[in-house]
Amino acid sequence: MTLAAIVVVYTLFIVFEVIALKNANQKKQLVVYCILMGIAFTLSVLIVFDVDIPSIDRLVGDLIMPPTGE
Image (tube, rainbow, N blue to C red; front, side, top):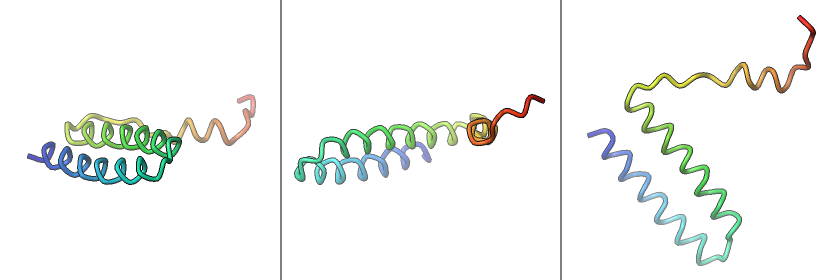
């Protein structure tokens, strides 16, 4: 039931936004929107199926903090 609700909500968001972006001839924004919505949808479905999603804390910390040699 939850998966069906997620699919319906994401479909509604995508339909309305894609139509608006197409009418405004904003191709770059449309591509970025589709990529981000695809990532968000994938993560939502994984959460519904109780998949353990690793935190990106360590990756972000490694990118921001320079290596200390430890």
